[in-house]
Every structure is written in C-alpha cells, then in structure tokens.
Length: 311
Image (cartoon, rainbow, N blue to C red):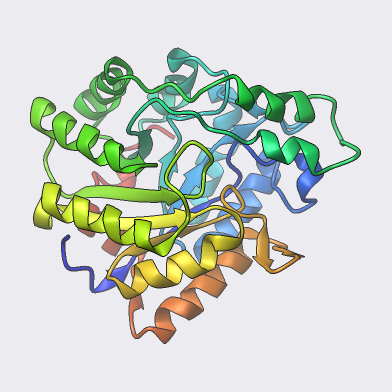
C-alpha cells in the first residue's frame, strides 16, 4: 500500500438502497443533493460520491438529465472531486448505469469488481408504514435479484469511460475475490497506478464487518498491488465509524455518508452528511493524521482535474 500521509475523506451522499421512510434527512431532490454535497465538502470531504433519485418520490434513477440538475451546481460551489456511480441501483442495466457518466465525463467513477448478491431485504421488515408504495417491494426484490458486474461489463465500463475521457475509478471490493478480479483486470487492460481500492464491509452477500476481515483484505491487496494502490474503506450501518477508525489507523482513507449509514451514533439518525464527515474528521485528526484537500486528493490519485469534465 502506498504511504498515505493524508487521509482522503469520501462522502457518499444518498446512494440507492436507503429509502425516504428510513430517514427524513436522506437527500432526494436535486436541491437537497446540492445542499448536502456542498456542506459535506465544506466539512472536509474531498471526494463526493453521487447517485440520483427521482425528485417526486426518491426512487433511484440513472437518468442523466436528473444528474445534470445537480452536478454543475456542485462543481460551481465547491472544488471537491465528483465521483459518479456506475453501480446505479437494483434492476438497472449496464446502459442505464453508463448514461450519466458518459454525459458528465467525470474525474472519477465507482466500479464494482464483480457480480454479487446484494441483500437489503431485511430492511423491508423494519418498518410498519411506508412513505411511498415503491419502497418495500424495491427492498424485497434484492432477495431474488443481484448486482451484475460481469467481466464483460467491467471491460465495457473501462472502455467507455477511461480510454476516451480519462476517467479513473474507485474500485469497489466487497470481498477478497474482488481483489483478485481487479488484479486480473489491471494485468489484462494495462491499467496504470495508483489504484483507489475501496474495501466494503457488512453488505449481505459480501464480506462481513469484522476487523479481522479488514486485515485480510489489506494483506491481500498489499500482496497483489504492493505500493501501487491507496486503501480506503467503509462499513455499513452501526459498524461505520469503528471500521473507519481502524482503517485510518492502518494508514488508509475513509468513506462516510448517508448511502452507507443513516446514523451518527447508537439510535441517533445523522441529521446531515456533513455531520458524519465532521465526526470522522475529528477521529482522523485525533489519530495525528491530516485531511487531504481536493487538489491533494487529485494528486494522490492522478486524476485529470476538475476542468476536464463535461458539466
């Protein structure tokens, strides 16, 4: 793992799994996403990871026209690196998932490193009443559905975004096998370091949120990529902050946001993404580490620059 004197904080602002019933603070509309993203950047996030939602009911959408209602405004208001999803959400096709990144040509996109079960159906049993009719069936559909990212689809995403636009990737690894997938793709495609590798813990279908698993993932990535990668991690739900603390202590970067956890502490909903950013920033600085600015993050990840996007 490359030496990381400074910590990159990524904030995943809204995601595609949590639904409006779960928190009144989950940003839904373009205006809300802009406000949350700008505040998170002001609190110390140098990367903003973004999904879109239908403003009328909060349903996840890949529609590039919706993305364009908030991307230019965020770019005008902050110098943060904007990272657009290519994972999208349950039920979205590869063409759906590529539509917004192709339009926007961002510096950075997320890229899941394999097809996997992605279970959120347990959330469907936690609420007695729903704000919108789509929410419960959407969550229950993850019992029989899966998140598709075949080798062919990964190659298509790289060919569509990296080669013509210079977009680089946050490689999302939900299990140890995903690291081996990435090593093979790096070899076959001749991808150049540094690689931002995001370790993800606690999603049903992926590796569990135990600290031993963080060490296994780090040791495996160290063996496969040596000094060519930069580690970041997040864990879902209540394990969010403990995992980020250990990851930062091990020299890595961190990701927070209402996509990953709706809470700021036991039983307490986070009132904003910025609240989580400030909490993890306090933890990181208490460990004696400094927070990277957006331009420092760009240099650490060899990004093309915010002046070379299409929004």
